[in-house]
Amino acid sequence: MNDAARRQIQVGGFQHVNKVLIGGDAPVSIQTMWKEPLPPGALEGERGRKTLRRIEALSALGCGLLRFAVPSMEDAETLGRLASMCTMPLVADIHFDYRIALRILDFPIAKIRINPGNIGGKDRALRVLAKARDAGVPVRIGVNGGSLPHDIRGELAAGRLTREEALLRAAERELAVFNEAGFENVVVSMKVSSVSGTIAAAREFAARHDYPLHIGVTEAGPLIAGVTRNAAALYTLLLDGIGDTMRVSLSDTMEKEVITAREILTAVRESRAESGLSVERLSAGEGVRIISCPRCGRYAFDTHAFTERWQERLYGLRQDITVAVMGCPVNGPEEARAADIGITGAGGKILIFKHGAICRRLDIPAGPAAEQITDQAFQQELAASRYHVSPST
Image (cartoon, rainbow, N blue to C red):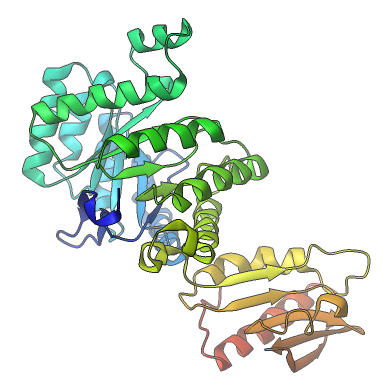
């Protein structure tokens, strides 16, 4: 099914909240999920300002939607307050208690995620859908192995259904409730923790339905395992033209989830001739491309430490440039000649270069001042090239 034939929904775009389109020919959007509880004190004083600054930083990295778990009515009140304070579209993730969903819809929440099967019965699901329809708020049906209805879970355990068939049946059962309510403002996700299962379930759903599809690998694991599994599954699906919004699930920071999603989209952009996706659909993959050497015994510059300090600031640049972080002359200006700007070490000096030409040499003293001097010089060269990043992390 081509992009134009798929449904499109709008998330946000009311009051002060930014608008994100999902589906159709809209760009594939990136989302992440807040990793900690959000108690009332999280919005007060300096702690509240820190919360808002982090949300703004996630937006600068390329995150379009931010989801929060809402396990209690108190959490709904706090998230509702937060939604009134920021422009990022916020998504409420609700299970079991339909009253929480009804309450959160009193606030400028941009989207909610429910499973009609565990929200307390069809009549309660219909009440939530009626209020969401009146508020113009879309709903995501999120199906995974842990949320399968008991009868479907039993058929899966007995071997009468594959996991992909079980997920599809559960999603279609939930969609029937939405159809009964006349509710079409819906996104669907079906997630498992395996690469093959994620791909198979999404392909089967996309072949049968035109609803916007949220893609991701659930419980993907710690950083290395999680990045590997997500990249394998999501790159494959996006090359198929499947997926309208994505979340990379990692047992790591939200920032790394967003950066990984951007890198996956960048990789698909580079292969877009095969994907059938327009470059506009992959625009969330635009921006800085960081290349860096892995470091070895020759290194004269600590690429690991520099990249760790700078990667989030660089990814916040919304300019399509390549930044090279190299450890020695072997991988320095010559091999990274195509980079718009880069940094390396040689002969006891730090070298900053642009398009292979050295523009600054620094003698770096030992001790804590070394990082400060290096960062200041790199910041100045970025600014001289009109690549503007925040001066602080």
